[in-house]
Image (cartoon, rainbow over all chains, first blue to last red; front, side):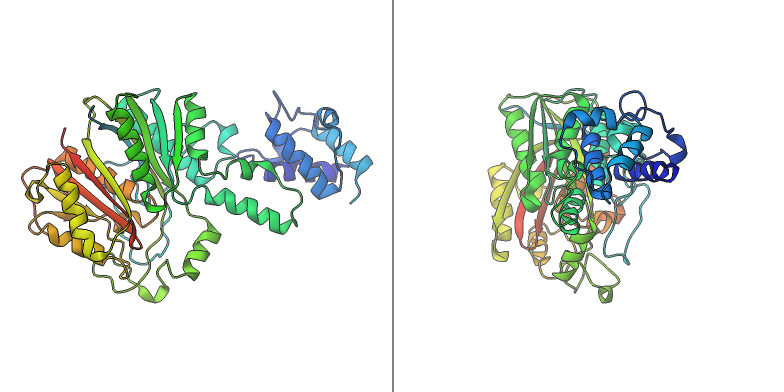
Amino acid sequence: MDALKQELKSKIIEVLNLEDVAVEDINDNDALFGDGLGLDSIDALELIVLLDKEYGIKLTDPKEGKTIFQSIETMAAYITANRTK
Amino acid sequence: MKNCYINGMGCVSAQKTFESGFLEEIHLNETENVLFAQQPSYKEIIPPAAIRRMAKGVKMGIYASTQALKEANLEQPGAIITGTGMGCTEDSEKFLKAILDNKEEFLTPTSFIQSTHNTVGAQIALGLQCKNYNFTYVNGAVSLESALIDATMQIGNAEIDSALVGGIDETAAHTIEMFQLNNSIKKEEDKPYRVIGSHSKGVVFSEGAVFFALENRQTETSYAQIRDVFTQNILNPNQAQAFITDFLTQNDTTIDQVDAVVLGYNGDAGFDHFYDAAGSVFEGIPQLYYKHLSGEYNTASAFGLWMASHIMKNQEIPAVVSINDCRKEHYDTILLYNQYQGKDHSLILLTKC
């Protein structure tokens, strides 16, 4: 799980082009949207594609996203439970 | 008709034009067939959340437009009008490559959103919260001139008091490869890459963003008045002289009244004879060039206009841009002529304020 969290942080920084943000700067329970990392709705779309491409998870219900993308912790837990690759 | 004045300018180019004075720090290139723009620090003017999604062209455009507005002390332009020949090629390439690499799956939105030609104009408007007229011209090498025609007509007809006009083009890896394959870019064996007296085909390719804050009133920061802009897509070489003299006649200007002519020589031996023909009209008159400094791209003529405006304000021609040794006491009227690959001919007539 820890390795997955590190991998997720690294991929999010790369995909979202988060300049000036390092893996160490993101805590597992930091909010990804709003006050935390400050991501927005376009980033949410990028994260949905990331889940599909890297872990074979298709999010069909947009409402799910709010819970899944709360933090690295929640994302990693969801990926571990639902990944197909 | 109201007059149209250039009251502010901003320039990001292959030279360090974004920070130093007018051509104070120059790098003369004869060895690189692609010249990349010198990049300023964007962090001071673009929020981090926005900058991470922006490709080079968008950042250059925002920087140059901010400088132009600041110099003119203009907060909300009556119109934002941009010209670009190739648009946001970096994001277009990224998006198209993702389609191919991922077999048309997993397409992400960011590069697609930012890949449209009007991205620069839109991002400037978003930054300024400016809901006024916003238009982007994609007309090859007369894209900037088309934007200028639109702005000068609207200002002339008193529809608006001011306009922010700019030309932006960025390089991108695959586009450069394509231009090398079709010989639009000079080859290694063509070195040294000289613009005047070149015997090889192709150009030194480049990129840049130049913005002009235009207003219907003369101010302390005014550089020049744009008297007229004219474009013509196709022209035979033997028509080049008449193209210029007819334009001057329409503007009640004689050849003798032109104090300097700025020619868009780019070192492409296949098409520079247009400039030779144009230059022969202006014997004994200072003839200038600039693409040895800016490189060639669809909106490189914006660099020429930036240079001519500085010359008009300073009343002095830097030796580095002179083709001949002619000098005049005053530079009250400057004509600019540009074309690319024998097409997209344009003329801009500037007069002193």
